Amino acid sequence: MDYKDIGQVTRGALEPGRFKVQVDGLHFKSAKTGKVLQVKVGEMLATEWMKVARGYEVKVVTDNSIFKFDGFKESDYSELKKFFRTYFHQELKTVELCVQGWNWGRVEFNGPYLSFMVDSKPAFEIPLCEVSQVISGKNEVSMEFHLSEDAPVSLTEMRFHIPNTEGEEDPVQAFREKVLAKADVIQATGDAIASFAELHCLTPRGRYTIRAYPTFLHLHGKTFDYKIPYQSIIGLFLLPHNDQKNMFFVLGLDPPIRQGQTRYPFVILSLPVDEDCQLSLSLSDEELREKYDGKLSQEMSGALYEVFSRVLRVLVGRKVTVPSSFRKSNNQCAISCSHKATSGYLYPLDKGFIFVHKPCLYVKFDDIASVNFARMTGGAGISRSFDFEVDMKDDTVYHFSSLMKDDYGRLFDFVTEKNIKVQNKGKMHNRTVSYHDDASGDSDQHDAYLVRMKAEGEERDSEDEDSDFVAGDSGSDEDLEYDSAAKSSSGSGSESGEDW
Image (cartoon, rainbow, N blue to C red):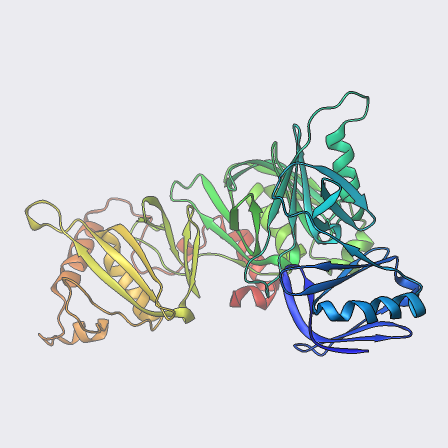
């Protein structure tokens, strides 16, 4: 028997295709990918027929999976039931769903799925293979689900309240263990390769013990745990704080981790510069040579941020991105500013801008249409700060405010060197500005504001008594102590990190 316009339900998305029922089993061919799914007769444990939003559905239960096919007509039931009974020796059972809308009932575990029963009827079912994480609390179990990129709307989390019962067995723990038995959850088996205790995490906020396993990173906190597969880490950044006492270590994630309805596309750590670390990896010298090409040693020591970035760079296989050649007059590489209502730091990098820490933003130069330098004036018309706007090619605008006027000239030069279009708006002329045009002396292209900012900066530099800084020197001043790990990591890291 052959049925057209049938869809397979996969993680909330309906994938259209063609459904065939043959003597050896069921066959479904996806119209999108052309992939053929086959469920053999010997794999079937149960078959069910139920009315759903889009016609009728056939559910096939196997030992470890559930397959759902939507789009059948009511008239298809009789011939399917007869075929299943004759050739599959399975009874196509009719299931009536409870539609009362109650949120309390009884939970039943039936092989690879969970059924929430109300008045002895299933209100909904959860395939346990789609559960990505299980978190238990007092009288509560929270389940998070794998997301589908094809589903316009996805169920991300569900929480069950479990009342206390008399008896020795903890009902919350028993529920959690039954879910974990069939869930697709990353399990921490064996010893961690490396462990870093009580690291200060800004996003998500708290202190986490971070353990590095061969395939994923485990963040263990007092309230929440996160398991991050290495393939979902798409960027590593090591950024010095302006106080020169801490380093930001940023992990870019895709897909992001979640805490309830909150999504975290970045994990941001604050690591003290003066904290040392002695680390022993739980791998033999032979394993280090075979798996990691000798890039890691069994005993590692040094500054915490250096050791941590070196371990992550090798395990993730991506380059650690550090600030570019951009420097302010005081040799700092971060510009203090505000985004929306939150103050933070804007770092010009080789291939983009990154703002930390709340919210963390990463903007590639390739995605920028133009930037705009907008002025703000203080009392008596004296310019004390300016705004920096980034217009993206998808019409998104990122607005950074309260940048000090001392940073105007160097940021303008940096943007010009990167060949980014500068589009003046508002109080600045509505035209494209070129730094070289300003230097030519053409009165129509002359930017008096830029000239004044440069003159004031040169006057301050000449009066500065600090003899260690020489403006324009590209020698050892750029080799800050945080670069020692980053530069060594950039030489042997993956090129894919540079394109992120």
